Length: 606
Image 1: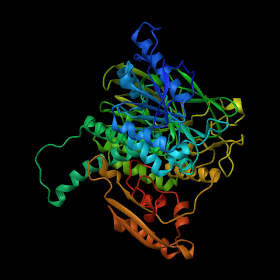
Image 2: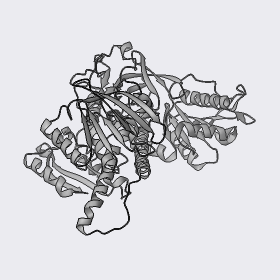
Image 3: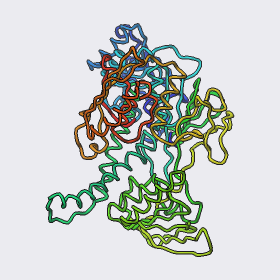
């Protein structure tokens, strides 16, 4: 399930408080040690691992019971600034001075594991991890701190989103901007080959982004061949290094994962890397990778768990085959590859693998690109055949056997005809399955609260406002029945849902910096490309000026000029689904006005 350690621990079984007495620092309530240094962890557990878990439990108890919890050091000027800030706001806070308690260093280590922050002060407000001194003051200046300090409602959260992909993150951020208390539960169940990934969902981790980057790598190889005809001369033999490519791509994806986590933290969205399962109305169980369970309640929920690749259900498929979940981080070159399937995922992967010079065969059950214009689909297939991709039509695998282990090893594939009794065998290094995807909805406890799903597809029927059969539960993205399975659709759906639920502000004129995907792995400058539109407020925000600084600016502008001649407005741009990932799609997601002075630097995709 697309639902990835927690940024802010939530409600759990609270432990006893450490031995302490209460004092005051400039109006703030302080947890300080008695006459001698207090030990936070009790001497109960004997092993170091048990002691560490007990310490973690006690820290969570402190965080859970405190409206404001500050882990500080008495001599730290940054900690003093934060304590003075809360004092000036008249807010009572609990403070644990790590330099005045036994095991302070261990406390800081466990805090680092929980929050990914190694410094003090380490601030929590109403169970949400705010961060250090700078982050706390930024939250105060933006108004987010004041939102977090608001009194608790009947539920733990206004909104809990299950799934941290494109749709879920878009909805979470928009709801937080509108002042709501939001949590994102995100957990990636490892593939049968053991592959998992970070926050961001399919598109960022195992979809659009790595696919286009590998496609770009293949295009560069073709460009090398073409360059000789443009006068480039080189004698050295050119070959492709799979490991170098995947390392660069995964490094870029890791930076996007971190950017999403940072974005959630900046907007005071609680992010928990746990698997969500409904247990009763308005209540969900979150299970982390260690099997530890925590329960949360919310007024409303959004399901945005996406889909995962389907398997054949034959001998050897899950044991030996890979899917798109595994391909983009595969630690070795796949070698001679059989791609099973005729979807766009199958053909895209076959295309760039062949572009690297690999021996690639596509096994097709019936037709190419079902649901697409078949004249165009056959032209795609013909082009691929002309460029070295082989096709086995009207065959399906019935058994996969491992002949040799290795990286890659050797696999024997037994297949049968879909039109008769003929069978064939083939030996390949890698078998890549791309036969479709299944919705991640069947192990979420939806039946316990009455959310109906399509029993065949697993998709969730929703109405025109993304509402499921249960009024307080909504669904966006690929799990929604009858909706296009596209990243920009999910982004737009999530954003608009949050606005419908919590009330949107007036639309304004926006601009942004952006980073073309083709520039990322090559290490070109980030946040140098720029997009801006100028609108006439008195004419329904009609677009009267269009500016872009970036690659292929002329090509992008030409398309929008025609739309401007037809009366393009800001609302029409907002209602447009972007083509992803492209530079032009940035104009469909403009959100920041120039007059606001807000930061327009980009940290990720979507």
